[in-house]
Image (cartoon, rainbow, N blue to C red):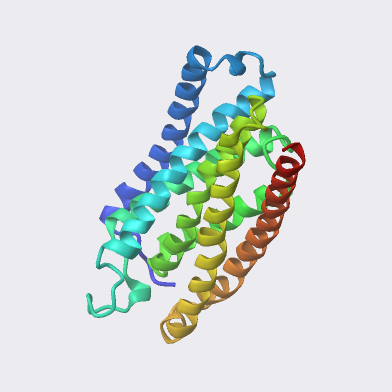
Length: 258
């Protein structure tokens, strides 16, 4: 595996990871203070529910940040456009991609520590597996400087997280029968379909047509690219099925109540 730990990376990586951790801590505290002042339902929550409420605050911020930067780098910028650079697409990276990978590592590490500390309340074994695979993939891509485009595609799937969190907030606040809860459920269903199902189909199609470049990566990177994303895709399909069943159940209740 080629080294990718130059003078810039030696400063950038630790700072970005540390920034991700600090961001989580600050947003956690802000969520707590803001909720105490402006949400009556927050004061009625149990201690562990308040922990999850605040935890979902920083997971939402990370999701918006990661999805926005990933979309910019993959879709808007010319970093990965065919013919825009001499080097192979699989080898392209930027300071911004390194930075968001470091911030995401800080987030996944912070969230994983909380999940393990309060296990299984904040998430079961599937969340530990998801975070573990995500951290492994990001670290491998950072160290090697390879496959940044594919890690960014997967990071964009975090765009569904705000809808998941908002759904939980409405549920815990006793708003499960509100129109807002239903609209958010529909948005979650559509968002998950696009960002975690259709996007992964595009991911595998893209990798298939660029497999000549994938084969230039070191062996561990190749094996990881053909094994980790399918595992994440299977988890996404499993969660999508649960979201679909939940949405159908809610819509069925609506019809019967009319």
